[in-house]
Length: 129
Image 1 (cartoon, one colour):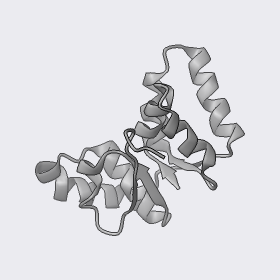
Image 2 (cartoon, one colour; image 1 turned 120 degrees about the vertical axis):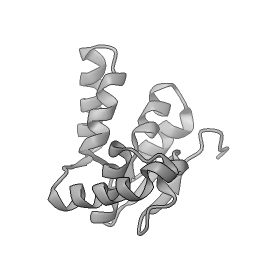
Image 3 (cartoon, helix red, strand yellow; image 1 turned 45 degrees about the vertical axis):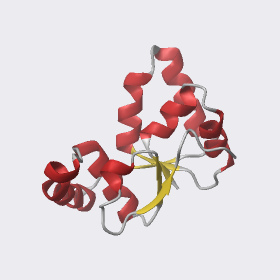
Image 4 (tube, rainbow, N blue to C red; image 1 turned 60 degrees about the vertical axis):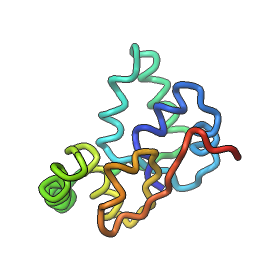
């Protein structure tokens, strides 16, 4: 499963269900875009080190962006930027999930529901387990 950036932000803010979701998922992955999006949320190098340590300890795969993913993301932005406000980062994350045939876990339905071929796991921080 590929985790969207917002899952890490919820976990960082202390949302227990987000932390449990990350911890209880096998075959964890993120897009390189998620890595880059999350770094500005780190307040210092210690938090960045903790984030990288988490990724390493939980054996996250980090999927890089290639020409195929870039092309598919451009098509998504062209098709959905004006109608659904999809931006570059979300399009790249969606295209990565589609390319690797991975489930994308996100709480951001607005930017992802219309993406053809994208398998979604919708996370709600209000969901009771």
